[in-house]
Amino acid sequence: MHSSVPPLAVSCQTPDRATVRRRPFHRSPRKRRRHGLFVGVLVFLSAGFLLAAERPNLVVIMTDDMGYADVGFNGCKDIPTPNIDRIAKSGVRCTSGYVGYSVCGPSRAAFMTGRYGQRFGFERNPQYRTQDPNMGLPKEERTIGEALKPVGYVSGVVGKWHLGAHKSNHPLNRGFDTFYGHLGGGHQYFPDLLTLKDSYAAKNESESYCTWILKNHTAVPPRKYLTEEFSEAAVEFVTANQKKPFFLFLSYNAPHGPLHATEKYLKRFPQLSGKRKTYAAMVSCVDDGVGELLNKLDELKLTENTIVFFLSDNGGPEKKNGSDNGALRGGKGSAYDGGFRVPFAVQWKGVIPAGRDFDKPVSSLDIMGTIADLAGVKADPVRPLDGVNLIPYLTGENDGTPHKAIYLRKFDGGVHTVRSGNYKMHRYRKRNSVVLYDLDKDIGEARNIASQHPETVQTLEALRVKWDSELVEPRFLGLIHTPEWQAKIKRKKEAEKRQKKRDKETR
Image 1 (cartoon, helix red, strand yellow):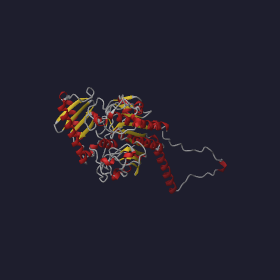
Image 2: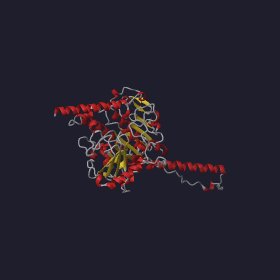
Image 3: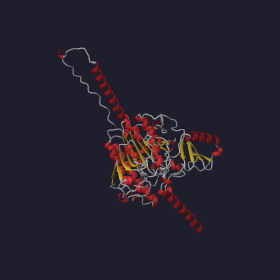
Image 4: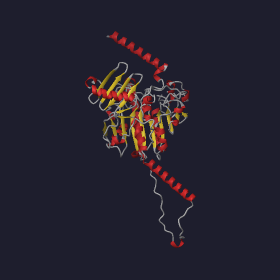
């Protein structure tokens, strides 16, 4: 816990009365003004230090493309995650934890601002454009780092950024004090594959995967497997800033592809093979890093004054990386729960009761809502947060529901999604149809009950219309619109067509 301000020293020694010359208390107006100013400054500084001492640290650990069922606290059997599970055991497992979008960039934009990205046009994965200031998070939107800086926090990002590669969107230009990571949407993991020194010389997403790591603004060559590098950097940040209120965003790019793992971790899974084996090794390395960070918080006696969130940025792309979303339908990129319902746990020892499940829907947007409220961040009336302070709900102080509804819009796919309570509705623009699911009875979104509950559809549709009226269209063409990605999609479709033909011939 941060040390509080010691009481002012007061001398109790009484001078010899015979040596004291009595005189009336009097100061000139100038001296009185100086005295009042001095006292005011002391009061202000003391209050500031006390507030800093009472404000909690915030650590957000975010994985990349991790499946809902790929952690022990959500029932995973073949990949042990004892350290990630510590967060849930010491705090709360949020069984209906959602993120702001079902792919990386827009999800991170929503988390980082506490606002749905559709409000400010961040609805696609940004292209890697170092010369385009509009290809990323708008300057008008306030990041968690920008929100916390005026109230005395030191903030750092370790790992993946993916909110814009232009220098104006570099983390140090968006409210953060330190950065050790990469600007794009993914990265090679082994040092010998990082052949491009300058991040700003990369011409596209593929080249950005091969850049050196940025330490603030300086390119440095990683010494080891990237996940281990990021874990070490996170521990170093906490150690260096233990005397101040801090925010650490530990943003692992694992287990996002490419699927790379070291022999040390592959050996842990002799029973697995193929993508699942490599994926498991990558997750296991992340878990070790989480353990190192939690152990450091314990060692520095910071655990009871630190809120720790663990989550993935979106659901797992099961076929692509070997992840597992369990009973949830769909995966990364989908409006089904497998796309944006993620492993989600929160720990604040001594405040949040340990070992509980919280089943009402919560959102990654609530991370900004939580720390902004606890740290005394001044609200922006022009851009109000969608996220709320979760702590009263997780402690049981407030037995209500954090959100009337959870929303998703996929502009390019023509899908609107609203979840309210146990009901979830999808409206498909192109075919002008609506489906409704009861997630309590049908977690896999398999049985459409819209015709049986027209009044529920009407209620959710009214929520959708109101929310949609507050949104804007995407402000930039995404990664999927580049010639490279269009060619990749074409090759994939052609391969699927050839496979179907072969399957037909062998029957």
